[in-house]
Amino acid sequence: YYTTYKIDHAAMYMKQGNMARARYEYEKILELSPGNKEALEAITNIEIRSGNYENSLAFVNRALISNPNDYEMLLRKVG
Image (cartoon, rainbow, N blue to C red; front, side, top):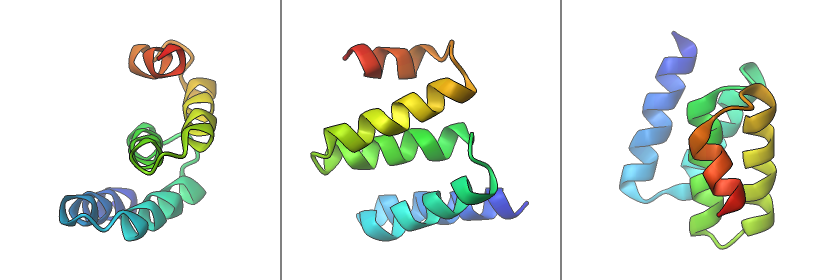
């Protein structure tokens, strides 16, 4: 339940445009659940929006470790 709570709060911060706080919340989720797909995708999006392409690629690679056949993440890697 805690993870769901944190994801909801992180999504709320993203909708408000508070990317720093959203990223913080998603990082907390990843501390508890390192392979959390939703958190990894969200941080990847935040990094892309911020122009941090190397960091976004690191999160894509991290997501692919947990789920190597994730089509969306594979497209982002090729992308």
